[in-house]
Length: 356
Figure (spheres, rainbow, N blue to C red):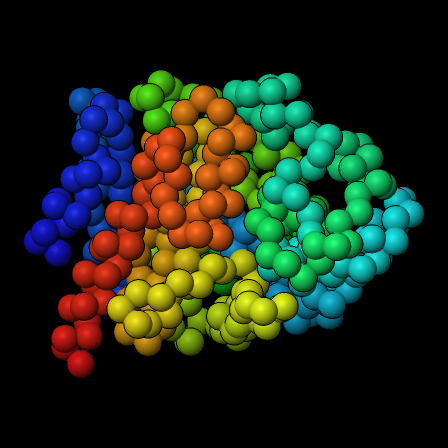
C-alpha cells in the first residue's frame, strides 16, 4: 500500500519511542509495515518483535472454550457454579460459560474487591485466587444477566475455569489447541529467554516507560504476548477454512442471539463498507493493539503498538474500553489504535472489492 504512511501519520506523530507494526492480511499472503521512532536500531525483524496484546487474549480464551467443548470436557451451556464448587451462590448457577465468553453474565468490568490502586504499575498481579473466591461468594448481578457488559473479570474467570477443568496452565492450553496447530510459535503468556529478548518495552501515552503487566488470575482476559507475524497467521486461519481448527474458528464467527442483540464467542462485530467485520482490540499500561477481518473479501489487518492509549488513571482505561465497545466512539483521554486500523482495513476492502 503506497499511501500507508498517510494512514498512520496521525497516530505516529509525537511518540518518541513508538514501535508500530502492521500486518495486512489476505487469504494467501501478508504484507508487513513498520514505523519506528526509536533512534536505537534493532537487528530483530519488526514482524517478530513481541508485544502485549491485552484483551485480544479474550478471543483466544473463547476459542479454547470451544475446543474443549468439542472434546466434551465441558459445555458452553454449563453453569459457572458447576466449576466453583467451594462457593455457594445461586447467582453462579444462573450464568454459563457462554455468558462469560459473550460478556452477558452481568459481571462488572472488574471485581468489586479489586483495588487498582494497590499496585498501579502492575494492577492485576496482586489479585489472588482467594480474592476471586471472596468476590464470587457474594456476587449477584442477576438483574443484568443477558445484557451486554464488557467484563475483564468474566473472561478472567472463564480462563481460570478452563485451566482448572483441564489441569493445565493457560500456556499449555494455548499451545495444545491453538498455537501449535496454527504454527504460531511466537505467542505465549510466559516467555522463555529467547522470546523475552524480542519483547518490547511499553510506554504510556505520555511516553514514559512502564512495567509489563502480570495478569495472574486474569490471564485469560489479557495475558498473551505475540508478534504481528503470529497474529497475521491467526487472521489467515480465520479467513481460510483449510486449517486444523477451522471448525472451531467458524463457530466463533456465528452470531448468537442474546436479548436484543447478536454476540459472539470472543469477537466484536462492526460494519465497514456495508460488510460485517469481526474484531477485537487490546490495551495495557504500555501497549495498544487491534485485529479485524472481513470474511467475504478475505482480508484482515493487525496493528501492534508499544504505546498505550491512556495515561495515569487505570479506571479511565477500563471505562474507555466500555465506551469503545458500546458506542464505538474514541475515548477522550488518548488515541486508540483502532481508528488507524479501521482506516487501513477500509482501504484494503475497497481495493479488493474493486477487483471483484
